Length: 169
Image (tube, rainbow, N blue to C red; front, top):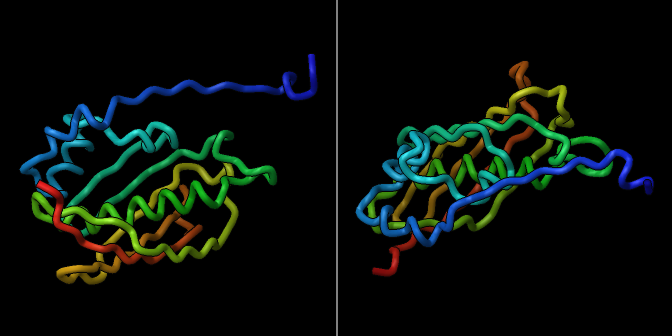
C-alpha cells in the first residue's frame, strides 16, 4: 500500500441535469425559484451537491446558506479552503439579489470582495452564511454576506456587486 492509499477517503455525489429543469423556472420570480429549491420542489444546482451545502432558505432580499465543514473542503494546511468559503459567501450575497428579481430577469456577479477573519475547521461546526441586499437599482445591485461558525463568531465577510440582466426569451 502506498502512502497515499493508507489514509485515503472517497466521496460520491450525484446531481440532476440542470437543462432538464430550466422549463420549470420560466414564469417564476427569483424568490419563487429559491423557495421551491428550499422545499425540494426544484432540484438544487449541481454546485450545492458538489460542496455538500446542507440548507438554503430565502426571503425577499436575504438568503441563508448552511454548510457543515468536511475534510474534503480542506486545503493542504488543514483548514477549509478559502475558495469554498468564498463560494458560500458569493452564493448567499448573489442569491439575495436573485430573491428580489421578477420573472424573466437574471443576474451575474460582477465582483466579490472577501475578508477572512478566522480559520475554519471541522471544529467550527455548522457555518451559517447570511446574504442581504444593501442596494438594488435597475442595472446593478450591492449585497453583503456574513459567515458565522456554530458559536456565532464571525469567520468571514464579503461584499458583492451584481449586474441585473433581462433573460433571453
